[in-house]
Image (cartoon, rainbow, N blue to C red):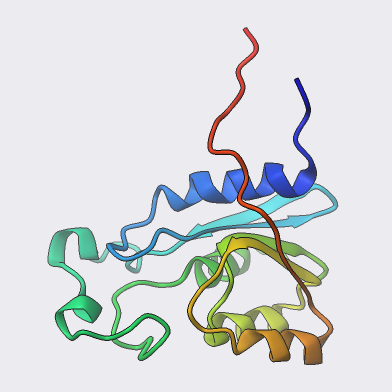
Length: 157
């Protein structure tokens, strides 16, 4: 039995967080980590207390809007945005953190992460909007796309 590395460990956690998503198109999870310590998590879904897409349907599908376009026509808040909001609500700085996410960020989330002063972003999946890459380079944020972690959990009883 081998022990998972940190990337695999935190990406598996991001995948579990994504299970809470209320998006019909894509489940995305994010885990912000600093010094091997989990700071906050976030997943994509409707604002707190609002009816979600699982109940109401997807506005983007109804309007045939492709992925990566017209972000404003959506009930959901992205996983990265929810992580930033959770950090703000609980007084947690994301400065110097690594964000582990199931997918790469859209440009809107990337801008927010630059201003939140994260150091790096690690994902195993890609989003259709790749414009964040140059922004991250300009801001000095390391981006790593790694292999998808195993979708199994090893239990030792």
